[in-house]
Length: 296
Image: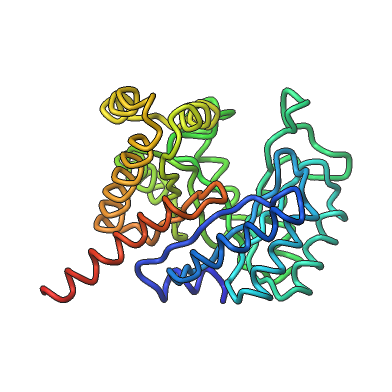
């Protein structure tokens, strides 16, 4: 099913993101994680590229197996990094041949060996250019990225919003945000987007915290701010890994419940290829919803 249709048909709408493993054994382990999460009936799962587009072949392999072997709708990431336009056309034809209907069109991050993104000769400089090509030449449902607290490379919120409007005008059917921890930042962003004329669904991205040092590093890279009270609570538990994970699950559960109550179209979970935290959050949300229905 095309994700744009799925977002309209299913509430609450949950989806999960994975990155492609580097070995055959790790691929099998990932498929086991997807099997565990499949019980929660996700609207789709997404499969990323590695940093700098380094795992493109694995992305296609894993996407094919999740959709073909497990019967779960897949959104495959496609990035501009290190690829010509013709390279990307070949990849898209391969995905289409595998029956995949949904892609996430991204500029992508520079490889660790490079200080900044460099446009490949014969490639694209911006995600909007990739979106436009996919929309013009293929029949995919197209997702694009959004940044409630702005892209780290953007000079300000206004500039970042202008880039986003170009992606939507080029043909993006829905948006998925970078992870964040302040729901007010998400809703303020949605208000700005609507005022700018963006009408497509904007799905919030959530990453349940399971490791303090890891989330602090990732938040620093993406520009996601940890609210002071959450940061203080994490610091108090920094030498208690289990307590950090418990707090992370509790915080994400409350955060997601609030997002859905205030009208978010669904939740996209960044799983880091693990299932326990995400399963705990979604299971709690579903149980709460069932209890509310029974007592209504």
